[in-house]
Length: 221
Image (cartoon, rainbow, N blue to C red):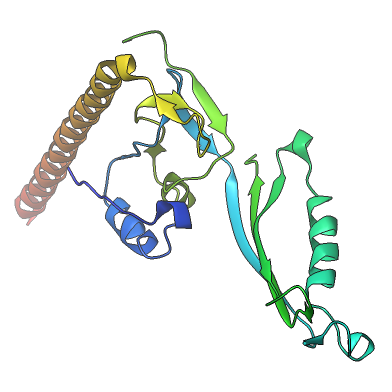
């Protein structure tokens, strides 16, 4: 059993991603303890794109040289408007401009401006029966899934309000969620033992078949 803890997930896991991918390669399954949604587990997440757009202008005093310069903020505002207009909520595509920065003072035409953009696109018996759900947020499970490896997400504490002022976990559900993770780990361990037995049986049959073939060949000689 292998445990991995990282502290850069909210940034997109830029430093820990290669370690996650390497650690998952030889695992029978990967369990991600992201917060659960009610009592369900997450079997599908949206794809996540993180982009930075930077515009450059010609910096100058806004009163004396307004016609001899160009603001970096104004074209960035137009780009933001056009970009967010491409969102398609019916198809599960969301576009959010999370931060905008630029300029140095109110009376100075900005020489540089930038914005950070988050784009999400849809991929095509304990308590009550678990139901697989698809959610709009991304997690480190995306990296494992992209490798074509088995992964189950949302096994952490259930709650609501991601990144909002009312973000919370449901304390009364914690024992059940712990039992859920323990049960999943137990089933994976059982599956691993079964696979090991099958593998040993297969090797024995191959060895026995080779031995019989050698004996038959020796008899013919």
